[in-house]
Image (tube, rainbow, N blue to C red; front, side, top):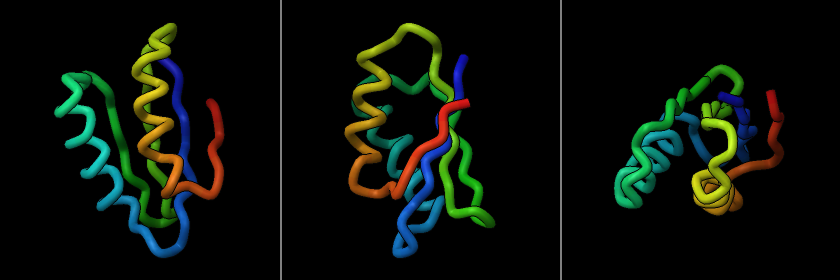
Length: 73
């Protein structure tokens, strides 16, 4: 597993974006991902399994309009 921390734009809240991402992944039948919101830092942490490029692409596409940056862990 690897973690990606998405730093959000100020106009969005971490809880709201995390819930929306969970819904999007459920629609795509990709609901086996751990998504954590951190309101104090206004970021969403997504734990992705290694080697699943389709899943990473879906998450990256969704988060592209909400993030100011990302940190790979």
